[in-house]
Picture 1 (cartoon, rainbow, N blue to C red):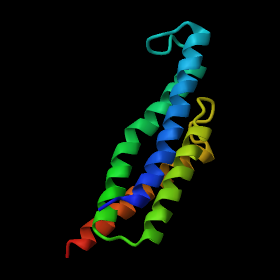
Picture 2 (picture 1 turned 120 degrees about the vertical axis):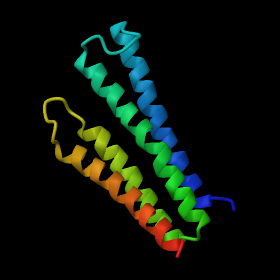
Picture 3 (picture 1 turned 90 degrees about the horizontal axis):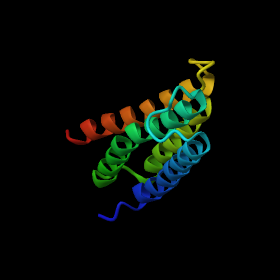
Picture 4 (picture 1 turned 30 degrees about the vertical axis):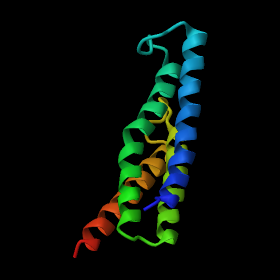
Length: 128
């Protein structure tokens, strides 16, 4: 099994993670804060944007790879992958301390959960 579809979205989302990590590094350089966020709200938000992606990405890609291994058609895998990419970018764009329930943040979180729950449903269904 070559996991061709999963590899596409793993690559795209890894680039996004690298972008976020580099922004955090740049913000740390600008502020001189090397550990935690030093009560700098802007830095804290960028740390959370990167951290939230890191917290969700591994499980989402594992579920996607398992679906691909179990034979989920490529069209569905691409739908899952596109949803994950859009959701993770939306979540980061919507993360704002002034608006905890910002629409993009909510859409990103819900989109990520829908993609992962869809994968779980398929995996359980495929066992029977």
